Length: 113
Ligand code: AMP
Ligand code: ZN
Image (tube, rainbow, N blue to C red; front, top):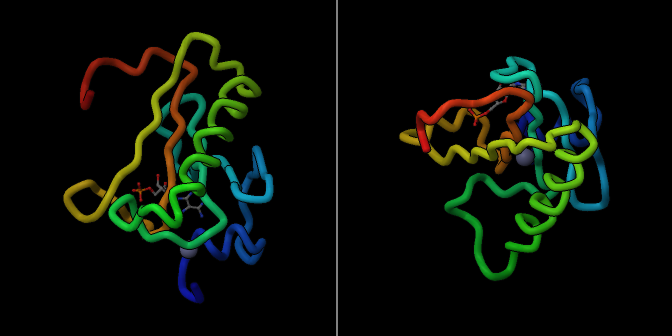
């Protein structure tokens, strides 16, 4: 996608602080962190949001979760963490490329599930 911020970050056209990369996934630190650890885990395939996940592309979601487990260990999140996926306008999604917020490093509280 020509005009997608995260596609540009994955391609290296916009700088990011990479924490993990494999064939399927690129992960980097959120520019506006909401917790001591705040990593965005992004599939290298452009899928706009959770609403566009289906039988033929769900492997990208699985690969993201496999990466999340690895990143959480590497970041020392031994006491747990939260994964958030915003979808669409009501979900507060601002970048229309599927991504998972990995948050941790402190007790995150009980608000918003
Ligand atoms: P969302 O609101 O779920 O779409 O999340 C988008 C996230 O991307 C926000 O938490 C932003 O802080 C983050 N973000 C936006 N631009 C950048 C960037 N250039 N590098 C890192 N994170 C970014
Ligand atoms: Zn994209």
